[in-house]
Image (cartoon, rainbow, N blue to C red):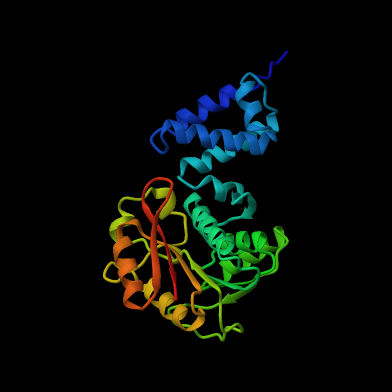
Length: 291
């Protein structure tokens, strides 16, 4: 009689930790394993931690093994699973879009705080370089009376963003265009808020980045020329000068190495009330200004 050995949750954690050693540190590997088991086995993270001797079905073990093979290549777990969460909302993700980051949630929170403090009840919002649509969708979900539009150079990214708008039951106008070489006419002449997390990674920055970013995430959404790292900020600021009303808001996520330069750029273009804000890690990551 053949005995079939069943893997337990504890076995999976040990196997993932061993196989991912050198790619992720211990804490990262544990967090990844917890996420994958929760997704594949449909178990809460609390239950996974509380009952490590729980046996896993053969079909689930097979899926966990396949995912581990992909993780060993450095492929981000969000791309493997095809989804992630941003600002408490579900999002589809794939290789055509950047994976939403926690610091971008802080940018969204800052924009929402500003709308609340200025008691703006209705208006127009433009997200430039929308990618997965995470900023635009999170803002629309929390400001349903506002009309939200979003631009991206990538048709594939806009297809993903549109699927995410449908997933989250929001109506957003998506526009396929390049802010550096704008061709389409935008229907709305003025926006109360223009917000962007544009490409800002230099080639020098690239050498410091994890391969699971540089090898898998879309380069058009990441990198800028070494000799012109603020190229997108210049173009967006110029656009904002003609499309923001007096006291309209401009929000940027920025390269932490260019905080002062970004502030100076906006000051040179006559923006006011310029504020540089650090993220939860204490890095210069966000700028707010008024026209």
